[in-house]
Image (cartoon, helix red, strand yellow):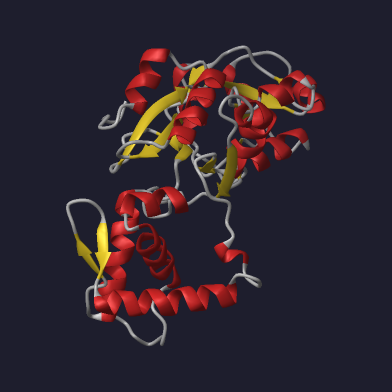
Length: 310
């Protein structure tokens, strides 16, 4: 392993200290809002870096080796120094905290309007939000739940389809009036706005007998928030993707330009790592499912310990 740094990776020390203090990988995972597997991998990574074993695995829990005992003492001393100056070690912990990952558009357009409903209830939960576009390793990064847009079936996680999107064209109210009603091909006279995937526009045109390929005059934005902003600013025609965009249509910020719809080939999925979800994650997943109109049967399959992709 690369020893260019005089210190082992800090995440490995954090996992080691929690496991040494509790005598259990499972208890350490609960304390740090990670999974048992994530703790085990971090400890193995530390042992590989050190070139020695820090734990003896036992039938019930783990016990420190002599080398591990010395490292535990030094680690506690170091962490006590950092405690007053670094919030790295004061991250909220406990079963009421749920680490949740989603894209910016899902967070602002779907999650934020429901945030208070999702956190309140019995038990009350606190959502720790990780916002990004990248494909994260849920178990490695300690993520309890995630919402992603795609076709599902991501290896190494349990997934259930939250909702599909029956898309229709929208534009600024002024541009919508100028375009008016008519045949689907009238939209080809306008710049078409889409995010990083133009599959929605292809599906809409194909459903109505036309072929579509992105053109130079079309406008592409990485996030769906920007797609809606561009449409509201009169920069072209976008596709409304309910339920993400419905509130903006209802508020009159963007206007429906055509009554024809088409099913988006991608949809929204609720994901979790394999294994038994924590009680707080179960509570939040249940509330998300209720808000999305997911059936009780599909939710039960998603929460089953060894569930396959739903």
